[in-house]
Amino acid sequence: MTLKEKLLSESRNTIEDYSLLFACNIEPMLFKEAQNGKSEYLVDFDNDDKHIVTSDLFIKNVSELLDGVNVEVIQKPISAIFPSLKTSYLRLSWGDMND
Image (cartoon, rainbow, N blue to C red; front, side, top):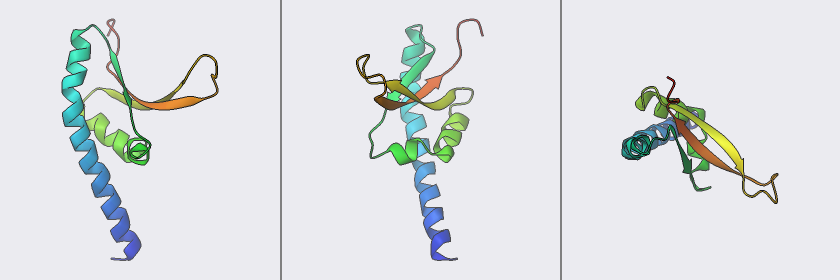
């Protein structure tokens, strides 16, 4: 196994572990939001975790772990005064009341 393969494997393992931990911790919060009549939850994340949370592997894994919940990265303006300045969120949604 080359060094590159070892490094990629380590990165994959880290993202998969983070995905599992995230999904387990976020599930109770999603139930709480659903109990409040909401159908989505926005997660703010640190720049330290941005490379993990925005990775395709993380999004795919969390989508599978949270069976049926749509997982995507969205950007929202920080303020109405400066709409071009945006921050990223992880959006977890489970449809609307018409589903």
